[in-house]
Length: 185
Image (cartoon, rainbow, N blue to C red; front, side, top):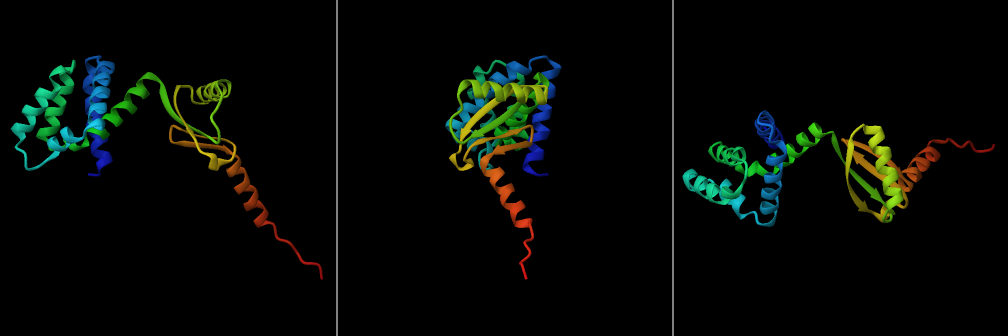
């Protein structure tokens, strides 16, 4: 089974458990805290994934580290991952859970890239249009890439909307190349 399929399967299982108990947001809050800690220092995750460390030692470590976690579902889930030797997928599982929670809440992530920083009015206009098109609340991340020359590129829900000057110039170049010019005899 591929890594992404494993993460999706376990992310789905965790989300279903949280949904059944109506604690999706609380579990997500705990997952965010856990993700931040893991991204700051991966040693905990490395220890949980290390095959040379006995599972009981891993479980004891996980119990002590996760003692402050509010949701028992998450503590038990991490212990389950240790038992199944899947702890190394934890960050990918968290990412999958995030997507599922967004879907439930009607939220879609968008990456907006512009050649220069956008002013507030421009950003509000773009967000409003994306929300109208998608029918969802847009959570956005802004990036600046001078290489696009002008305009914006939006990646939303797996779809790319390219309104950059670079893209327009490439299309113009391609259409000019396709024109056959006849020489005068």
